[in-house]
Length: 125
Image (cartoon, rainbow, N blue to C red):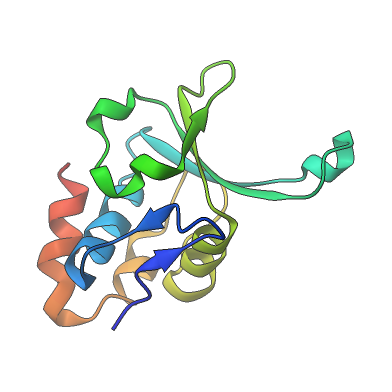
């Protein structure tokens, strides 16, 4: 069973393992929709680092399970998904890399067989 709730404010929540693995597919698309970042805001006088998913499309196109984690973007980033715990989890446990390009083979290798259809569905969102 995957962890389904992330963040100090529980801002990223999945209703099921199927949704969790669908989200991994969505985030691994390599189509310019998202990128994964660890922003070192403490270098600019802020409280600390932030794990963020940069979103380059309008959030109307994003699955609902990210809706409580959105914040405003800057420049060409339309919105950001803020959740240190979720970013750390997918990097540590599911082969995600910081930046724009994900290694689909490395990520897919972490997906249990019974959730591959969910992962593939996420890639088609």
